[in-house]
Image (cartoon, rainbow, N blue to C red; front, side, top):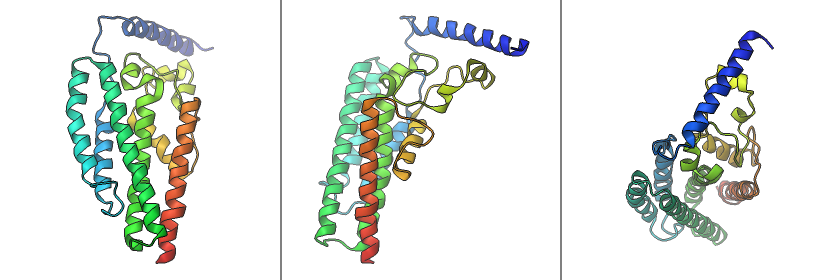
Length: 241
């Protein structure tokens, strides 16, 4: 091993020791370093996508999810600022669960409308596009919220080594981590969005293997929904056209 590589490795070990000492300090409350804005914007986009659903397909009022999402941002922000992380996590799970339920019900109504020819092919294509994009964003939200204890827990530690997904950054050697200044890297919402997008387009993970059982089940569900939207809704609507 060269002198340069040895010095890089020593630097990595020194920074890792400091990070662990800092991360385990119970007096530190400012270690929630992961940005939440991308996830919030993605959820608002999901609400906007639901607005594209016709009333015959939307599970109830198509504007209701967007209003509910925006309203939930207030208690989510309040609990996070006051350090009520357990309450914040539960509220976020409830929010994304209701959004997911609305999406699944809308998919069922769309399938019913297709079988009974209740809507025009152009409406079905718009519905399929909206549901497909919503599926990607919602599943990315699930991955982001559940992996390695969620964003709050991931933000308490510098670096990401344990989780439901094996990101390429996790396979780098300590020397390469130091060289690329990634010793404190942790996945954010955009990383999980990339995983979700690949799962819906390739119908399988690409550069990020899935490790845990819950993540495997969720990726299977996402792939099934995506496949159903593409083959059952979009392809059928094109065939009618």
